[in-house]
Amino acid sequence: NNDQLRPVRVLVKKQYGTMSKHYAAYLKPHVKTHGKFLWASGMILATWTVFFILYANLFNFDYFELSYAGVQDAQPVYGPFYKRHVATKEKKSLTDLAMRKHRFNSFKSDQTPLNRKIPDTRSEGCAELLYPHNLPVASVIIVFHNEALTVLLRTVYSVLDKTPPHLLKEIILVDDFSDDGELKTLDLEISKLVKTSHIRLPKRSGLIKARLFGASRATGEVMIFLDSHCECNSGWVEPLLYEVKKDRSTVPSPIIDVIMYDTFEYRQANPQVGAFDWSFTFYWQLREQKNLTEPLIAPVMAGGLFAIDRSYFEEIGTYDTDMNIWGGENMEMSFRIWMCGGRLLSLPCSRVGHIFRDRAPYNFGGESQILTLHRNYARAVEVWLDGHKELFYRFVPHARDIDIGDISSRVNLRKRLNCKSFDWYLENLLPMLPTEKRLLASGQIRNNKIGQCVDTLGFRKANDTVSHYRCLPKREPGYTNQVWMYSKNYEIISLENCLDASVPDANSRAFKRVSLWPCHGLGGNQKWHYSATQQIIHAESQLCLSVGDPSKPKLFLDHCDGSAHQMFTFTNIYSQ
Ligand code: LR7
Ligand code: MN
Figure 1 (cartoon, rainbow, N blue to C red):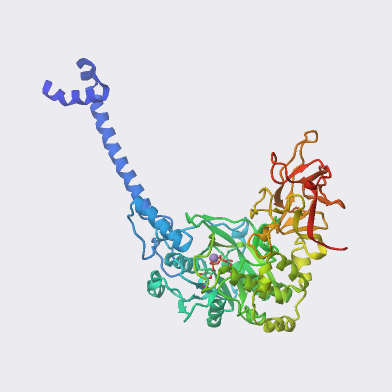
Figure 2 (cartoon, protein in one colour):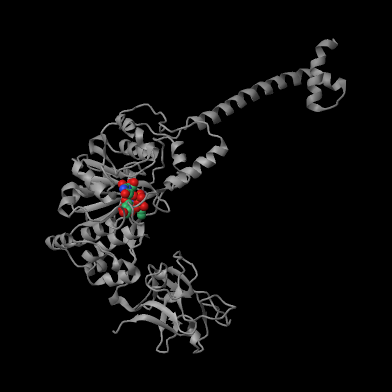
C-alpha cells in the first residue's frame, strides 16, 4: 500500500536523487533501518563530541591534585579573576592590556588553573635518584612588587604541591610596597593555604632589602629564594637541600626552565650555568654532560632562584644592603661565595620554571633603571674586582662617575672572610674571559681613512654582521658596541663573541662579510693578525679587513693592497 511507502520515497530521494520507484521500493527496508541507525548513532557521537570539547575546554583537565596542601580532590583551581566566557575581540584587548602592565600575558594566566600540570623536565635519570629522608627543612622566600595575582598564587601553589610537607617549614611572601589594587584579595587567597604568610614592607625597598627582610623572619634550616613568577617542578627541592646538607657552603640553584611570557607554555631548558662579560651582562653558557644528573659548576648565579643554609647566609655577609631596587646583587653574591670559600652549583635534577620578560614592568623608585643598575655594579666592582675593574669601566664608562656611597663595610667583610683574589676566581671559573694579561690591545678599532669605528651595532647574536659607525665618545649609549679586545690567542672579541669570517673561495676575488660568532678558542676563522702596517689580516685566508667599497658590505675581507681603507688603530696597545 502506497501510504506506507510515501515517507520512504522522500527519504530515498533525498539520499540518492532520482531513481525509479521500483528500485526505491526494493531498497525500502534496507535504507530505512540504515538511515535510522546512522542518524541515531551520528547524533549520539555528535552530542558526545560537543560535550567533550566543551568539557575539556571549560574544565581544563590539565591540573594536579593538591595532595601536599591537604586537598585531595583533583579540581582545577582558578584565580579570582578567572572568567569563563570572553569574546575573541575582548580577549585581544585584555591580552594587550596585560602585556603592557606586566610585560607578560597575565590575562592568559588568569585563564589557566593555578594548579595546572606541567611536564616533568628533569634531566634523564634524575627521577630514579633517591634522596635521604632527613634533609634540612626549608623556608621559601618570595619577594614581589606589583606581581600579577594569579601568577604569584601559581608560584605558591607549585611550592605547596611539589615540596614534601616534612621538607617545607613555611612560605614567606614579602610584598615590596605594591600599589596595584589587583593584590587586595591576596590576603584572603593566602588565608586558604597552609604554611603561607604574607608581610608588607612600609616603603618600596627593592628586591635586595625585601629578601633580607624575608630572611630575618625565616626559621627553616635552609632558605630558598624564588622570584614571584615561577613554577616549581616535580622533585625540585630534594636535590637543592641535599647539596646544602652535604656541604653548607654550597649554594645550589635549579636549572631555570622557561615559562613563555605570551603563551605560558612551560619549556625545558638545557643544562646551563651563568656567566658574564665585561659589561656585566649575564648570559647562559651551555654545558655538555657525560652524567646528566651531575651538578654543574656555575661561575655566577642568575640571582633569583637559589637555596642557601640560613646560618651560612649570615656568615658570608648576606647582601650588600646599599644596593638598590634591582640588579647586580647576583654578581656580588657570586664573587663573594666563590672567593670566600663557598661554591655555586646548577642542578639538572632540580627544575623551576620562570617567566622571562623583555624588561621590568615597574619603576625604579624615582631613578633610571640604568643608573640603579650601574651603581649596584660599581659597588660590586670596587669591592671584588681588584686590578680588573678597568676592563669593566672600559665597557661601562659612565659607571666611573656614579657616586656609589660608602663601601668600607664590604671591603672589611672581604678582609674578615680572608677571601681569595679575583685573579683566582677568573682562572678557576671563567678561564675564557679575556683579561688585560690575556690581551694585546683593546678599545675602539678605528679606520683612519673614513674615520669610523668597527661596530657591532648592538647586535649580539651569533652570525650578526659587523659594520662600522661614527666613533662614539665614551659617554654615548652605543659606545660599548665599539669596544673590542684583541687577545693573545689573536681573537678580536666583543663581550662574549668573536669577530669571525668564513674563508672565501680561494680563486674568487670575493670578499666575505665579517660577523660575530661565540668565541671557540680554536683559531680558524677567528684568528686575526695585527700587522706592523696596521692591517688586520684574517689568518686563514690572508685577506685584509677592509672598508669603503660601496658595492660591498660595510666591513669585508679583501686582498691586502696596503691602502688606508685597510688600516686600523686600537685605542690601547699593551706592551708585552
Ligand atoms: O623593587 C623591586 N622589588 C621586588 O620585590 C623589584 C623587583 N622585585 C621582585 C620582583 O617582583 C621579582 O619577584 O624581585 C623579583 C625579581 O625581579 P624580576 O623578576 O623583575 O627580575 P629578573 O627576573 O629580570 O632578574 C634576575 O636578576 C635580578 C637582578 O637583580 C634578580 O636577581 C632576579 O631575582 C633575577 N631573576 C632570576 O634569576 C630568574 C632567572 C632570570 C635570569 C637570568
Ligand atoms: Mn624574574
